[in-house]
Length: 446
Image (cartoon, rainbow, N blue to C red):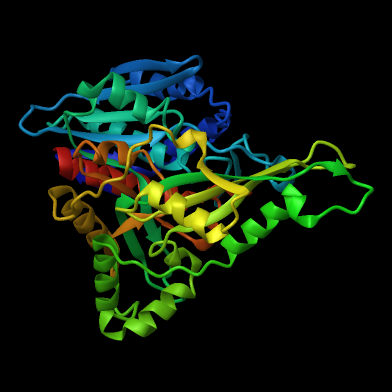
């Protein structure tokens, strides 16, 4: 469709084709983390901005790793607005993909590739909004910033955390920021209704390492099971898997429940038992109301005929806002109840910030809500919590309202692509995201 903005006309079919070509080329850049090597992605996006005469900087955070930071100046009557995305992706196990992961394959109405939904697709939506603002020449009341960072998938030490530590002046000028974390869905709890979540907070990453010790011996001889470290570790993991924990409500999830109950999509707090039963029956919902843990890595043994002296497991835990990492570590240790299985923090979380919450009674939230409800009849927009970690936590910790929101409607199958196999984004979602991201940016900055 064509949309008149301040006397200019946006040829959306042309924009859609451009965005599709950019995304397919972007997906062909392998930025798997580890090892990272996201500099080519930063240069790819930066070249598109430089061709339009946009002020562009590249900040090296480590060899072959760069932050792209670009700006369109406003009149300074309001503080800056930042569009932020990450250029790295999680690795793939290609034997489980039916499509090549790094070729940007378009098939039917789908664009396949690692990063299509997490989050190169959304990065292209932001990029197109940024380019359209520049091309339209509309006067801006605030600077508009485009920031593409590496290393988000490994907790951001060489990405957003580096930027905050080394160039705080580029961050602290920002009044609002838009990144990943929330989006629209085609249905909610089996009901056909488009629900859009705007992430205003997130859970805290708390990766733990379990270490079990025993006595080695020859694998051909019967061995005391209590002295086999692998057996001790297996028992510890089983105790964690069977651990039932209570549901906890925080302000964001209370508001989430209230608004969805008003829309007839959830039981309300006046039906507490039914509400809790509904939450417990759905793993995605349950993750919003309890600390979670999942065993993700196991290591034991050095040879087929040697009983292992030490076995380890890494457990991915995500804590609700306000929870203490140390208290949780001790709770896990107490739950295991075995002094020969120790629980320590996984080294990669050292130095990470504790997540804070952003308010949702803001100009930015109201703009998102207005744009979505005007564009999509009967849409429900609710503040929410990201159950995974994002770079937003670094900005929220500095008092910046950073929202996680991609303005597109993801099906359950598309959502399964986050860190999954055969990741894809539909062409319709790419088109919708470009149009709605632009409109959000225009209303925030013009």
